[in-house]
Length: 243
Length: 309
Image (cartoon, rainbow over all chains, first blue to last red):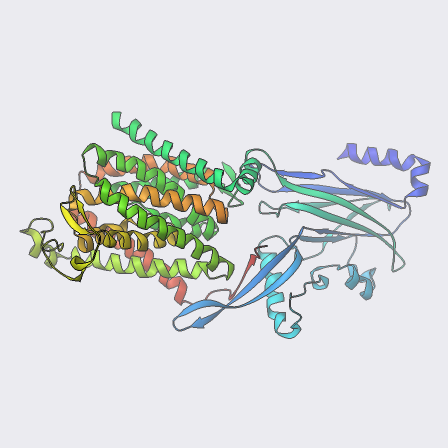
């Protein structure tokens, strides 16, 4: 961490850098690998600004279509009877600001940049707006419960009005794919500068190979699974016969 | 020790999975059942998606049936001809089952159908077994041979014996229409694919009471056809639904084979009536638990899933 700050300070001392970019930002890792021992990971987002201002950060997971089902009582049992489809919803959402967003982001911009969960745009596939509200709320609530949506806006720490950092946490069940990390610099109620940092969560190693193979060579994968099972069953029988 | 399951897309504790495999393997060795009907609900209970639980469990049953059938083959207790006919029906049934499974998944009803199937079949079979193991019933039966030919319908002449395509099954000492085992194989195949079980708990009573096979060849022959039907289910689930987690299956297997051997050794020391009533209680327990979940008001009426592309 100290090395990162030192590195940044070195960057800031370069005069050309300070003049051309009012905002620079990067993440400590551009790729989080999900290996067989993956148990969630923290990624450090850090950066620098050329003059005092406020920062807000939005992390969005790969857009994914979701279906929300609602159960109703049919006779004695509960059955999924209603459903609403939402297309291209961020599969992951995390926001962080230097101070409460209301203090420096005007209402209109908060809506436009989707600052905080309440401003996150989630539109049902069919534009039947009114009856979709409970489904939209349920989607939000369930995504929060699964740890994919962060319920509260997190904090960005500012150091001597120039350096900033924030911790991004990705849980074990983090969706895989390409994430977009948007960093905005606010001054006087307007966006002074913005940076977008791409970021990837990907399966790697044996797990990734298995997934790839299962997807691309589905039939062969099935046959191998069967062969493994037959071999294991035979081996077990042979091993215990001698005991 | 945590491990990430690539197809189930979740991190689990290795020892939990090994322990589950061992515990269900122990019970299956103890009672001589496949254990799929316990393992599939258990996997769903720890958070494995139902589709992955069903597909993976089919794969595991292939292994446990292979090791089981080898023991029965050594004793000559497998009717291969009957097994082959049942398998033909089972292939068609499991094919339809996997297709139905995909369809139900696309309309969001697969969990409901899995639960309902479990409640109906386990409830019925568990209830029947419990009734059979009641003291009064036992006393009445105690003087008799295990199951007489009349009881299993060998001498009975019903409409079943009027069916065409008669075949001779030497090992089972039967001369019956091939349509009967074909139909039994077909129905059990559908259920096996949807419920993620081998279907032995339905197949065995059907073989005894419907087809009229002698009891000593029933288990071996049932295991023999279960290998092929679950292999077919594994292949189709892997190909069309991509829901077979080979890593999970191997872990379950490892625990399962060890548990099964211990169970089989303890079973030899227990009375069969005790075993039957104990198994009946477990089967009924699973059925009641699932029925309870269907009936009580869910804590959350809404559920979310990724839409299929």
